Length: 392
Image (cartoon, rainbow, N blue to C red; front, side):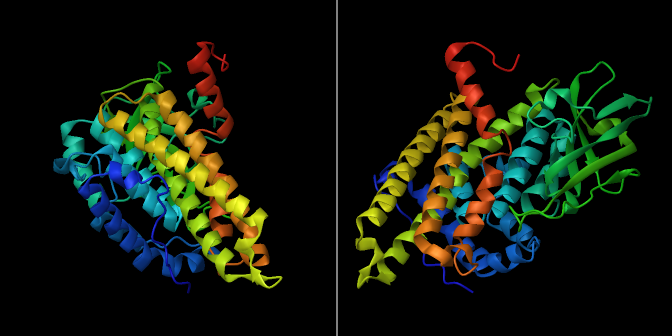
């Protein structure tokens, strides 16, 4: 069990841009990670097991839907607070951050944004505490980067809808009590449905054999003539804009979260460089190692400034989906490069569970792909700046 000595890195005094509340929230989540995540996460990752007892603890610290109104189970916090929570959680592990991100941004958010008042009251308070656990069904076996091509569908049967199809790469699904599922109606329009565990024909097979996000809970959603009550339809949105609106919220959290992985890798590499002696001196005294460290903190600082500004824009209701895409892509690319350099600095020790670097590195290979791949986000930026759609 490793000691978690992390205290944060802020080369440009970004703390000066944060409120007292922001810092208190960060301290709360950082203490949670040090107490409840860091001591156990390597063991769970080695065993490819999800620490499901953390779900209730995440609810207790307000990690589920922190920027949603308190009356609906959220924390009533601003968007920078949400980002800080995601960053601190991913500093512990991307799988734990993903658990919270899915619950808040992809389950609670669409029910709040697109659902009825009855749905909000029924589901959101229990999702906020972790009493209910949720997942989000969009990606399909044949439709990843092009979700509009989905085959999952539902038909109106008078007193209920009949749902058929399958989703895959679904975080939280094996343990989820409910799933927010996106499917096509008989007119070919995409709509959201709340599917509850126990509905006949609904199953959630576990995804095995992952080398990444090993401490995350991942599976499929399979619908075989599932009867969904009509009151479980999310009535206030139709079309691909529904799920994409959820993804923008989640991608914003990832933009902050990936920086957490980078910060942890940098922290470990910096400390190791002062302790590891080779050729009679600490390796941190060698120019090549200082180059790596200097480039790490430079790129981390640039990303920190980008997500802070994005958070301000989001608080003002001015952040665009394209701006969020740019930040998600930048943070993920930066974090992977930091993790790779940190792994090299640690040499052979970098691949062991004694240090978190290889776990972060493997996790980031998923984070850079899910909720919009690295290349797709590049094309989103390209379309935004040229006005020309490369997807058609």
